[in-house]
Image 1: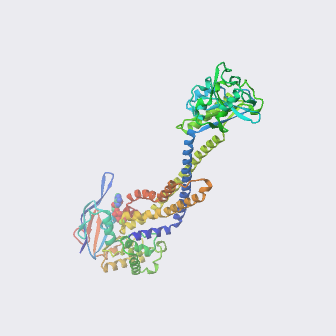
Image 2 (image 1 turned 60 degrees about the vertical axis):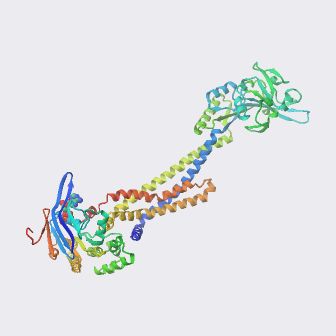
Length: 410
Length: 228
Ligand SMILES: Nc1ncnc2c1ncn2[C@@H]1O[C@H](COP(=O)(O)OP(=O)(O)OP(=O)(O)O)[C@@H](O)[C@H]1O
Ligand SMILES: [Mg+2]
């Protein structure tokens, strides 16, 4: 009997191919689109997750460029303190850099850096917790550059503040006294550091000064090279939510711009990329998911409508077959095959088509073929059967062959 | 041999909380090879009774026995099996399946009864030949006249070699000439041994039955018996 049911269903499908073919094609197209979109969505969601985790621990470097010539620094110590107070969830490695050139014997030229650094800079760049350094009286000088401070080497270019001159304890501009200690006493991790556009810089040629000691009026730059450079970064706790971090970062940029209109503040290239990628991925994933869901809805709505129509067309035939000795369960199986077979075939073809497209384009568009999406497509390909079964089950439960035959009587 | 025995049969429908009795205290016995005609006014319950006799419907109360076995305790699947194997139906409006050819229509009851494909084909062709439509085997119902459709329906009713054929106004939708042809076919089938239960308004057709009954005011009365 199974053979008869199958052959009869196929016969019915052949007789009504004009209904079934478009449905199968729609199903194939729908499943293919859904499969591809789902794979896009899964892979975008995965990258999104990675990027979110990255954002938590990222150091956002802010590029500071002058909007117009200015004697004021982009951020003075008071503003810096306000920033810290306002955003306790972030840390702000901040440092003002001045460059000096000096020579040991007149034949070689060495470059040194004076860094007016904040506590956060020490903590995050040099991995050294020195709370209060930024307002304190201690400075650290690397061994090589000490030669300059102590007068053994000659300054060629740049400016050394008087409080550092000739070593030992000196009175600072702010009235405090600065004691210049050997860099070793800071005990920084490693003897080089990398930050902003400076890579692998030796601490040997570095002087670390408290941020509060910086005085712009003290030594106005004569040339662009000896102008102070400002390194400001923002770093959020690793656990911080990515959206919140991005929002806060935007607030910080806004605040900085409001405080000092002579300067422009922007995320550096890496940060921009991260932000851009984050937004693109978030939007891309949402769009792909939306398209997939829409496609699914359209396909299933169409399918359920067709199942209902098919059932209505075949109702009388079922009543007749019931009189001829067909059990309800058998008729149900027959109708299910008839309703779902073409769509399922279309669905399977669509899933295959989707896989093929993904494997063909995967490299080109950077989509990872996802087993989850493929499994989803496979399930989806069988969805017509399940949907039809659901729709038909209730129809068949209420099928009263006798009433149909009576109702049809002339 | 007694095929069907109906005792004290009652059929009623619920209309809200009112019970609408179609017939009551109906008794009827149908033996192998019998030819029974049931007549009565429109709405008297003839079709309802025929459906019960054909196991397509159930009694509200009373007993129905098929070959001595009460069917009240049987499930729908069991009733379907009885219909498929032992009964055949012919309706006033033919009720062929539009998507199937004449041959495929005749094959259907055999398909559900599990008859293998080759045997199905052969028997269906043979039955079509018997009703004089061998040349129309590949035609769809829409390509057949009413009389031809009814003959296909009769062939279909005969598919599984039934004990009884139930026919509800089999000539009701046909003109005189086609009606007579169907009539001859049915009478001939009965002569060959198939029991026939006929519901009809056609006095001439009814008069050919061995036994005649009238449904009147919810009672089934036999012609020629006291009270009939
Ligand atoms: N499912 C049902 N629900 C309610 N009433 C029903 C149902 N089926 C039949 N009836 C009623 O039972 C009565 C008998 O109907 P039935 O079709 O058996 O009459 P009939 O003798 O065959 O009439 P006709 O000669 O016109 O075919 C009618 O009054 C009908 O309305
Ligand atoms: Mg009737």
